[in-house]
Length: 387
Image 1: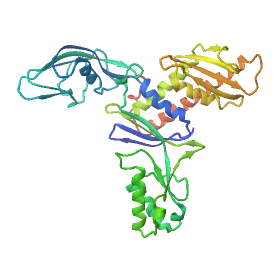
Image 2: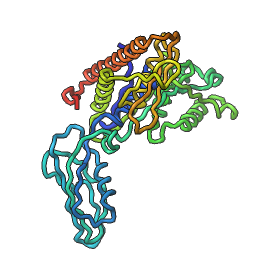
Image 3: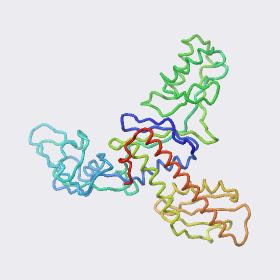
Image 4: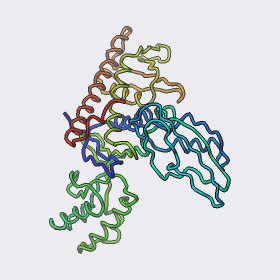
């Protein structure tokens, strides 16, 4: 089994960061798209505002309430009320701590500001907890951040690097790891000092890396000419097995990040398995060469994955897809063979089925690899369940 997930870190129990190796861009992007559209989350809904004399109108107040983060493992029939009035003369802040749970069990993050009330203003409302996905509304998304980027190998210009002694090179790499947060577990080049990943509150920018490396080299006595200093640091995309190496990050305030990524893999597995069982139509009128499959209910996520996988087939000359409109939930998948003949619809179907099988196998392998990581890290497997 390939090791696709490396350098896994959990920060403050809310942020998951890791590197992806030997995965196509479309697969990495499917993780991001899945958590934003498929993974189910909870939010406040069915909001009945009985009275609201605050500065905020009902729609904005309801919108603020729906954006309060909730857990992903909640029961049914949870009801919450808000009944507040400013009986004083000074303005008061109404926060999530003022929400009262009247039925069911629910933890609400305290002290999230919702509205300010002036004297004699009041709000009275009732609401329940509902479940949905990002396809319905962004308020259901269980993450505040989910992103990825190509890792970049950071190296020093070879002319300057050759001026360093072996001990100076070792000290430079230690400095980069300690002060510039560069990963030094893998070197692509002899003059590499680490891998550049996500910015950490603007502390790990390219500009900072260049400036601090220049200062450090001058400090240890390396003679750097002024014209060399501007391009002394080189940033190169990092590859593994001819594929980009990606840094991936997701952040959730209340939900275990391990749980969220497990749900990403679960939903992607379910999506591709369900897709195999769909009735996929053939449209012979929309193309002069090749064949067109109409796949209902899918969009760019599955379109890019299918095209990438079909393109790997030796029988295929070219493959692409179209989605005519974002609201038109279907894709048109085109396949053109290297050797065309008059009666080869069955061959196109076999190619599509073979692509499905390879994609299913890939995601199942990713799921198995992730489960092993959870076991090695002693993550409570009872919490990592299907929603």
